[in-house]
Length: 254
Ligand SMILES: [Fe+2]
Image 1 (cartoon, rainbow, N blue to C red):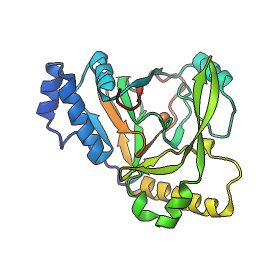
Image 2 (image 1 turned 180 degrees about the vertical axis):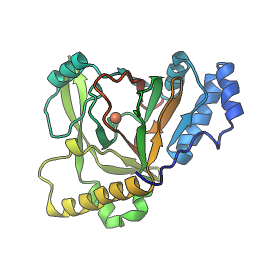
Image 3 (image 1 turned 60 degrees about the vertical axis):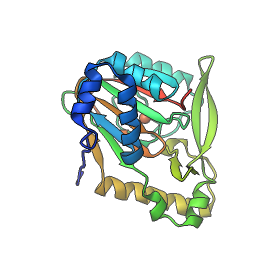
């Protein structure tokens, strides 16, 4: 990995963030987070906070759709596999130690929050790519074709997974809306779609090589990320890793 960039909350004032955390001022924190996500697609807050403030920020940013405690856990891994509507190559599991390729979480999650309870001893970094420049990398015709490619996403109903579909690329109010997971791509892709998909995947490779964002959260640190703009990933960790992350999936504001 080269040219690793690590943007922290340098642009928002650290003092401002620390004061808001100390004062338990969730609304001030949420407005700083919204602003930074609008500019950079994410914010990494190195000032330590407690989990209750993290969860309250989640509620302020939108509807909390999921609140998941992520740790390597064989039993949870087995349960999650059994609930799945289908298995496909490379489809990852949050509870597995195995690495996870670049992807978006489910598209109804506009924002994802990550809170570190305990970090892996060796690495456990969150890797991210900003897909915002894809609009300049592909032509309008290519972007139109990208909009026709659908990607599955699962929602749970009575403990079983139901499959929904969303376009890989869309635009809302001039902002890109990406939803990508290679293991969820539609079957039967036409040659024209395949050509553009390859260009899109080449862009991911290029961004990974040139503009990889790598953040190794420490206990008490948080990241909030625009799930429809950024892709995220993680490398393999040890089976006995104690890495513990709380992940919030946040939908639109109530
Ligand atoms: Fe994810």
